[in-house]
Image (cartoon, rainbow, N blue to C red; front, side):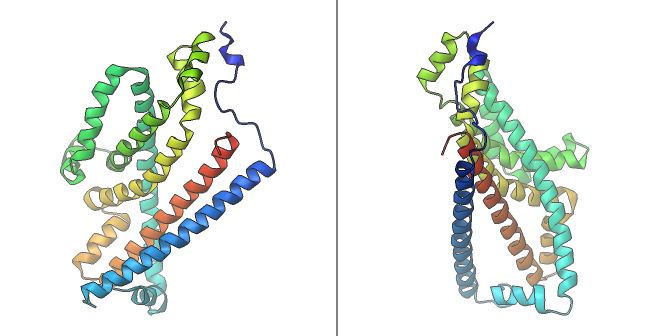
Length: 281
């Protein structure tokens, strides 16, 4: 029997160390708060400047007008309820696409690292999916898949797939030659190297992919709702544009942006905690 199973060849969680994980969580929360404040400040400045440059009060709505629409108008409560309901649908669609895209990217990355022919076959397909506009691919996706849930998973997953795939492959290939030699000396093959060393070493790249993919999944979900399902924030925005309900358009964009930011920050906090547990920070 191989002795590899009894040897630590990569970062292994050492269990809660109290102060270590606590500090990691505090650091993650501090970074998240700082990132949130900075991004909110930048978004607010860009929003105000854009509205001023457009100089069209019918189309361009500033923060004060959107706040009044969501909280001060007579039907503000009903509007908020409709937006929250639509947001729930969109987040559900995004979760489906995120899971599908990340799973496909992780499996494909593992196969690429294990087999050069797989890389030759998979990477061109991933590049094509990335290069061709999803609007052009959507009719084909509708023809290929009859189930609406699968269509959403494919459309949203395509947005997630390529950046996650590239990051994870790079992370899996970051194993040092010394660690690879240790695995081989104890009788481990490519699969053992992948599972025991490459995947733990790729955790930073994996979490970077998660942070990138969360907003991407929401973008894919919005596109799927516009072109396929006719539900959620994506459909609400399109309908509002067609009816010139510009306050509703801006409110939906604001809510989706804040939701994307919040999920990004959650991923950042989880990343700090998990990487600290694995001795990566």
